[in-house]
Length: 388
Image 1: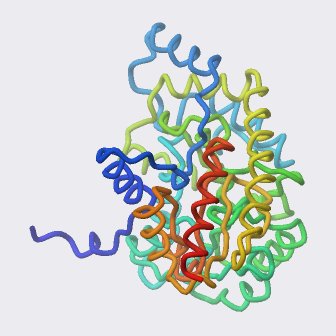
Image 2 (image 1 turned 135 degrees about the horizontal axis):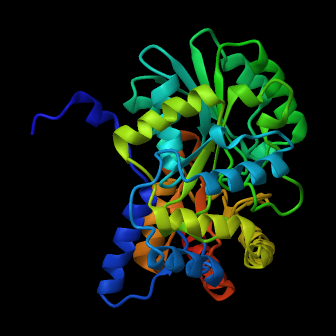
């Protein structure tokens, strides 16, 4: 087929490719330990499920406003205002089918040919994919192990130029679990204030923190109008399949996001929005217990990885990923990933799946049972020792 040239610029998510390869092995009779998918291994809390079912039974099966139903936007505005310390009006909220549309719409609305977009590397692979798709120039900012995978603010400031239209921040970060400090955010905010650029603050893991409170760049003076907050329900409420996310931004940009919704999705499914209201306003106990479980798993996983000779792993401060350094094995991260699946039946992701600066690392999702995590890490040790 004679496709448009821009289709050649689209990337993908390796997680789904590795999952498919793991499913093939399972079909052959192997038991695979899945540590590759970034998805909570918890069911959606029952009260949220019931709210969605009730909405369907009550007739919530038609179109909604493109930007989302008012009651959900009010609930989101209240929650974001409370957690970020800013004033948010429902007209500044756009509800989307998952968080990815907020990434896509931000780039479509703000960046174009000749513009530059700074984004973290290693980072969520859709950043780079969408930057290239809209014709902008990707400018990666490396995340390095020696500073716990936080971006180097001085290095970031050196990358900002007259063509910079958007800076993407992700804290807590996928895949490293790193968290930007309040001091980091303050310095980035100061650098952005007098420049003609926007910040896309991907805060999808904002509730999954272990040792500190969440800090959003939107909370710094003058930054709310320059920031697009991306958040959603997938990780916090174990609702990945419900496809429910949102963006918070200034009203002018929200109006344009509404037009992008009309031209692409029409609206987000009605029943999922009613479930979202219950998620925000109902019992938070299941979320708190899930995060406590992730903390226990993190505290088990990191010492086990560091106990493998030649492997080092920083302690993640948020999200539910470990990012161990396996460079001493002598294999590329991709080769290690393949060998681990084919010889030990453990599915993980190689660091370069998240950008070139991920070479030498693996991403392990600890959204799995302690038993699976212990067995998976033991098998990682088998591979490392066999190469020694």
